Image (cartoon, rainbow, N blue to C red):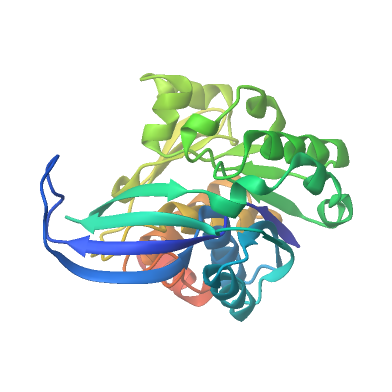
Length: 292
């Protein structure tokens, strides 16, 4: 079983031909509300790739909360540990343009999860092959989860996004760390490539369309990206993390797991919506085969 401790949001998506300048009003081409949140996105990604997924988190008592829970259940994600918190669910305001995105997250119910609550889920953690987290939850919740998993010997993946929620203590607690290039610079400075050598086969930095990089203990490995026509890049990192978690939980070696995750991410950007674009295992394997 894979357990995801993370955010569950409703994405409020606007697409426009170009990003407006400061103080400028621009006309949009599309508006949609679609299920999101890094935690939920990664849970859906893992489930579609064959993982048995348990979600830990919270939604509000609003209409978004109802929709978000139904969406996860439809993806066969276990939501018994997703609690209803009085007030609003988390939302993400997503602006799409020019093959890229800009995102503002309002955490809502996600920030009302407490360390005491996650301490009550030790049975779930002890039954997990791997536990995955992001930083759209309060830092004390993430730290407590990492501490519990370390004490139980359960491996963890921490996706340090957004990076401003990162604590140095997480470095010694997380088994795998998966920042993108911007987050890696925030964590390790401009010379983040040297940090790869400090965490061989543990730290992998995603590079968008350029793929990913890690250090295998002897060499720096650049996993090249795939040529793809991007429609919506919002869930690419989440697809990568969900796929990496599935592969590692199945005992697949780190290098092959990163290749698998890279292929999943390349497929995710081809469809609209963070969760809507998550690929199934057959498509990922087909892309990998075509890339060999």
